[in-house]
Length: 561
Image (cartoon, rainbow, N blue to C red; front, side):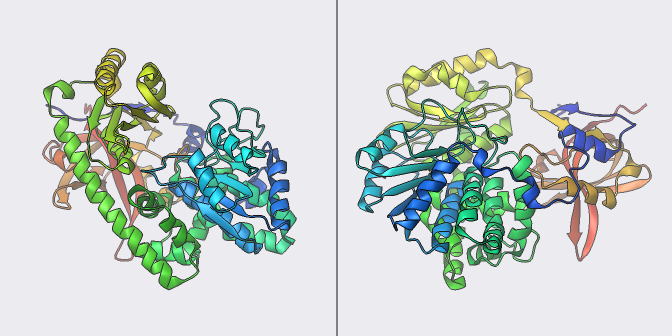
């Protein structure tokens, strides 16, 4: 059976009158001055365009002046951890005592609830500031108001119903907010508060230094939360990555050291694959407080110890994750499951903090909606869903809302809680629904290709210019190019056959290529045959020398005439 190509190819622009760079900019909706030098301050919007920012600033200034008891309520993921860290740093800067609370993923779940208010009350909290959550916490804010505790909400998630009756709700995604950019993460919203509040708290030099010294954390959260790298986010990450590379912050230095990044330039890939998973591991398996302690640490020795703990947790996470995924793959071998258009898998003892990874990995592998379930402490089943472009998972779940204890999400990801007695009916009904709306062609993913390139255009200089369009990430994807009618000259297995290295020839030149995670295709391709290849261009540093390397995304036999 001919397995190639793996995906449906879609070429966005093949205009021979445009340069490669012009095509890449046009495909991303970027202007021609995108690559010009810029000052960070020129790319930041007025923070007071955020609805209620003035109210938040006034209430926090009042709390600082009166030495009130202030508590930060955060979240257990990277964005929540960083947002909490930033707020603590702000109050430390002005010598104002502050406490923080992070929910336990397994016990408390996401967001501010009444139990969170009770814990804040134990701290005798007068002002509670939520970061990366709060927009849906109507009941909790009502409970806080009832005991005279003021709440300021700093969030970025979508508004689903009425707003909580807080002192201030600062969120670019509240329905009545005129802020021109909606893509900020939680830490980005906190940074806007820094902008507004810092001008009132510090002199000009201290304000500038305070804003610059925390860009490393803002970039870390922005990349990890997979928000669009456009508008303000692009500027924050562009500058923030330089800060991450150069930072002397002990927590980041030791995290980079244990991740093998200590002397390397920090890129979005380094954040997404090395730094963020170690921070997230704290909340997935233990307590997110460990991650905040790491980022707040002023001691290299303490940071070294905490980074080691996070690294060990991340190693545990990876082993457990692989076990769960293998168990799920075995379930999918059953005849009644393998032919479904959506895959629903259950592990009775899977950690709730890992089921999102299971569903995400299976979705990537099979290109169909996946929901992974496990039990919670109440005996209900909690599910984490991941989906494809052509299947809005939250809209699909809404058809069966009568069966859930709770649910919510967006187009590609969702969560739900369902009782044991309702689970069988849900599995049956959801599978029937997915099978009825998803056709066979929907289950083969699309590969978006920027343009077809000629061999003579492909060189290290072009790749360096392409890198300057970055940093790449959500909303500004890495360029994907195609090269037609290449001849396969050689192929080697890498990493015990998990990956393959290929040598292609085109235009009288040899091109070194790698195909990660596709070792099983080694025997599918044939020497001296001609292939069209789709790839991401990169530069590989080996023995001090930079070489052009193409990272293969897909290939197909050429139509050679």
